[in-house]
Each structure stands twice: as structure tokens, then as C-alpha cells.
Image: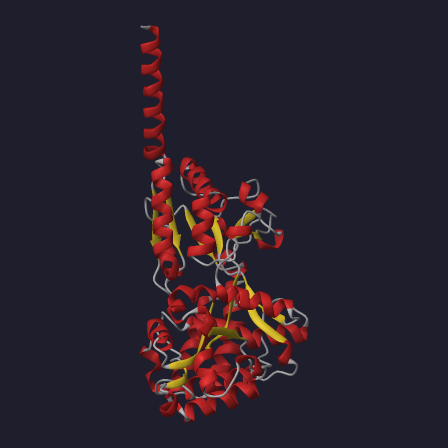
Length: 422
């Protein structure tokens, strides 16, 4: 009888813990990356099956993350896990960021430089993916035209090749050298942020700085010539770019309608149907002296932050979920193999190193002595600055605005937005 009573009590305790885990704690992850939505949804499902803790993943539409976060954070069940893009993003959300200093996440982080700290020195965010971008190229079409990607080592050479491809597009069976530089919200970040990083990077490098309250625009003529190349040697008329989307560019590239596609390692799942053997990535050249030694653009923009306004049991559950993602077989496989991430934790070695072939290209370039281009765009003073530059680029491409408006948005807009944010 005593044994039966003890067994019954044990069963009751197990049921109690299971109910408590599912009823008292939950995780709500507001995901920044639409291209990895399916993988995060599956990973959340697996975690819930294993632990009983509900994990909800909501993915913001491309270009709408900040707006979505502002809306969701005020709800009765706000995100417990969200993202910021660096110091400027942190400035907007630092009051909501839980201190992650003593977590296993920090213990496994491969470099303290991947931790985003507040003014008080506490860890407010942790980078979870190192990414690389440049110009992805279809080697097969390039070789058909008589070129090799490794021969393109300057803007002058890139323009020479792109102009020839554009002139021979009917012969080569393509619609243009470059995919459409869409300025729809799903695509414009590639140019008002990632491409804009190039003149910012070279100005910072020349001046020996890491941020500024007033950008000078030293390399905006270089920005102009790469933008001109993108919109001239293209699959579509520049006047149509306002409505062209990220999906349009993907389709053009995957269908072999274009040879060049500016994007990054995160795009691998979208383009892998072409086969790794047919693809490569080259640096974004803009015509700066010494650029033949330039590598790809590599850095971190995505930092995990835990909402300190959530209930403590949800905070604890969220941190547990994050730690499971970087230590469990399921989490490591999903992040490194399925999502294709380079993850900056010491648990991602051996079979859990990234399987993304675009990552291997960056590794090889760095090993060959090419200097990676740092990500300086997190120092951009605001989202409004990006929007101003994007609008000016779109109007210039359509012929309804001039380049002086782009310069004004870049330089004057920077000073204005920095003053407002400080």
C-alpha cells in the first residue's frame, strides 16, 4: 500500500511539473529574418514537444521589424525575445533589455566583442549570427560569356564585364547583368543600408573612426557609380524599381535571367537550386584605390535581446530556449545546417559548423589575405535616414530626382537624424 501511495504521489508530482511548465511559462520570439521563418517554426515545435514550454515565433515582414516590435511590445503578451541591429538599435530599446551577463550564452560566446553592452557595462544583447554579403554571381553564365569571377577585382573590371553582358543579353539568354534593384520595402534595405555601407566604410577607414555625428560623403561619387551600374545593366527599366520586390530579384537570379545579385549568406536557401558549383560571391567594388585587396562585407547586425518587462518565469523560459538552441543537437543542426548560419558560439564546431557554401567563399578570401569590409551601417543614426536615402535613390533611378538629392539625404539627413536621436 505504501509503495502504491508513493508511486501515486510521484505521478502526481510529474503531472504537476508538466502542467506548470506549459501553463506558467512561455516564449514569444519576434523573428527578424523572414528567410528563416520555416526553420524557426519547426525548431519551436520541437522544443515544445521536448519540454512542454510553448514557443511562439512571429516573423515580421521584411523592412517592418521596428514598426512591428513597437506594436507588439505594448500588448498584454509581448515578445519575450526580440532583436536589435547594433548600438543605434539598442539605444531605442535598451530600457527593455534584460541583463544577459551571467547566462550560459555568454559563457559559450566565442568573443566578448559579439556582446552588445549598455552604458552600465551589462550585456543587453548577444549576436547570434555572423553574416557576409557581396555580389552573388552565376559562374556558369559568366564562363559562357568568356569570363571568370576571380578576374573581377575592381569596379572598372566589374563595369567592363557587366556592360558586355548587358550588350550580349539576347545572345546569352539573360534579361540583364544585374537583378532588379527593387526599392519595395522587401528589397530596398539592400541598397539604402547594405550598399550604403560601402561609402561609410571607406570614409570611416580614411578618417580612422568607428562612428560620426556628421558624415562628410567623401565617397558618394563612388556610391553613385555602383548604383548607376546596378540600375543601367539590369533586367528592368530603372523607372520600375519602386515596385520591384525582393522576390522579383530572387526569381530573376534563380531562373538564369541575371548574372549578378547583391545579397548575402542568408540568401542561400533562396538560391541553392542553382547548385553550389554554379555560384560564387565577389566583393562590391565601388572604385576606391586599393580595392583589389578588398574582401566581402562581414559582420553582425542581429542581436538577441530578452524583454525585461516580461514575467520572470517567461524570462527564464526564454533564456532556457536560447541556451537550448546553441547546445542541443536539434538547435545546432537547425541553425548551422538548415538556416546556414555562422554562429558565434563555441558549441558550433565539427558537424555543426556552417554548411553554407557562400560562407566558405568568405573564409577562403580571408585566408587569401583579402581584407573584409566591416559592417558600419549599424552606426547609421536612424531608420528615417535610411528611408530618406532610399526615397532619393528611387527618384533618381526613375528620373524624377537628381543625385544632389541623394547627397543631401545622405549628408544633411545624417546630421539631422543624429541630432534628433541624441
